[in-house]
Image (cartoon, rainbow over all chains, first blue to last red; front, side, top):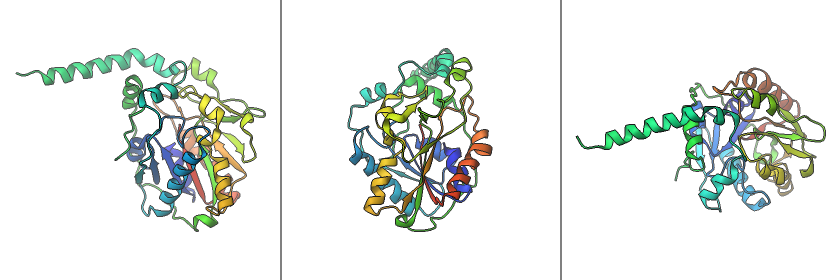
Length: 125
Length: 169
């Protein structure tokens, strides 16, 4: 999506991207970003909660109007009104995506390597 | 406090995302706001996999299942007049039930119509655009950059749109 924001902006449109993953917006370079600490797939708020959705949208519009240089990121202070553990479970699909299923052994191996590396660094000489 | 991109990610998916390499692209494009928000016309873009299930096919999830390193780069045009019961969500990386129950969490057509009534914005485009966010591994966004993104821009500009809100998913 950062690519789409960049492409639309380059074509002459003023864009604002609302995302729970500001790290990618910052790394790739998005014209204007509002970061929200909301679960994936519920970027603007909970279903059936228009007040919460509007709060995020109004902040996005304010960000769009006020940022005056490319690459700006504003971090929303809104808090997701559900415990993180439950929200993590709820946003995910019923089964892992095909690429995650295919790469799971490789990812787990990488995680083990990182864990072992951290443990060896933590051991006293 | 800055938003932590990894708060809602389980460890396996967080590790997967950390394996995805993305490169900085400079300079970052910039189009100054050409008129006040109250006079601006907005278009909406999401990558939540929304489609008009009455008249459009879903995104090609069968090919993605068969070829997990590939993601459908096409888009679907969503009219401002769409009703909730006409929206489908095809996306293998999120739980589709949330946007299927209220598309405004990704494509806030009704909220922007409220904003027009309140005088907060000038107008809303007749048509909006939905992509499916997974673009393969490693990600290949060349079709978005070279073909579909410019098509969407051209359609928005022909409608007099000057501002776009994007919601990745």
